[in-house]
Length: 137
Picture 1 (tube, rainbow, N blue to C red):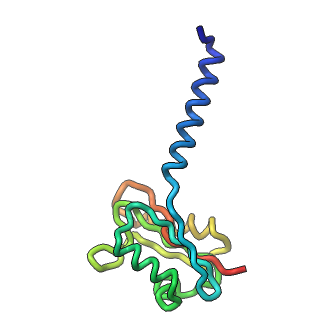
Picture 2: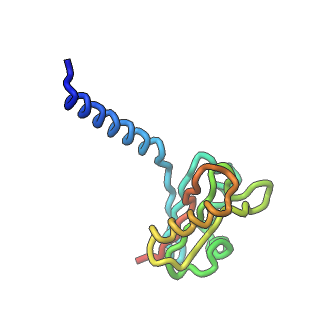
Picture 3: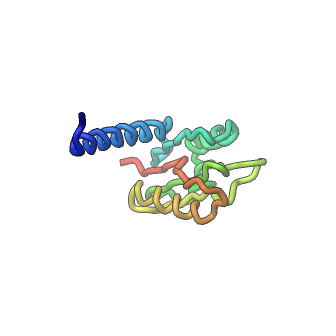
């Protein structure tokens, strides 16, 4: 027979286990490339289409393509997209896919791009970073 303390402990352990499972399920593959004076990371989210991944891979390996998304890459930059909306649909950029640059660190870039995307999106799912650009050290 369990007393209330043991039941509380079991509930806490179960909750920690579920949290860890959720965190693992939310992990996505990351591809990284050095490009000029930057390091570019692509987060391969399941909602990204094959065309979007092709475009984002071009952006992360071609300075001219990167400049279209991030004209000035002096600081940190991020591109965020809404899972239900993507980055490019029907051959056109999606309005809610937002790239912001010249931020002091990766966390600031991700937060700013995600917040701007969240304001522009029409779906319920929160925006996520799909591309991250950092100056090489």
